[in-house]
Amino acid sequence: MAAGQSRRYGTNKLLEQYEGRPLYEHGLDALLRATDGRQDCSLIVVSCWQEIERSLRAGGIRCVMCPDSHLGVSYTIRAGIAACGTLASGDYLCFCVADQPLLRAETIARLLDATQQTPLTACLCADGEQGNPVLFCASLAEELCALDGDRGGKAVMRRHPERHVDVPCAAEELHDIDIRA
Image (cartoon, rainbow, N blue to C red; front, side, top):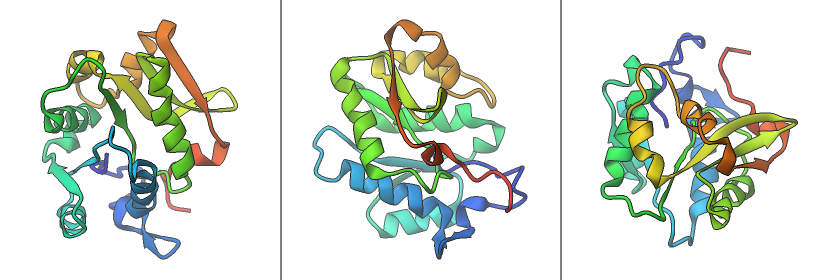
């Protein structure tokens, strides 16, 4: 999900330089490495930023534009689900935010592998703190699409604690960039 408005940051933080590259590229690279060679994954980036769309398309990465993302994360979630087309009962949806530059490919791969336990939901967790990315069984797509405004998928995740899996990670991987340093 690369469609946030960066209100607390004050400008489009996803295009700001972080260690010599635009912020969004760090998480994207981790996702690309985590899904490389996996036949069970498709990567779709949802954005409202034309600069990101152009860059992704030039790199052969599918990007779906969400001009309503300023209305809240629920619009980004719906755009991503719609872009997936028909979902099978064994499919999963994994939502990643684009402002976690320390997220590792190995950690994302472990989260994706959590589907082998057939949970309804799974997320990364460090020191008892649940964070992003979050994984949802496709059977929850309707609940996710019913979200409104700036209400994200964790509301759906919390409704299904009986079939949830926490995937441990290092605390720094959950760090997101919300304000200027």
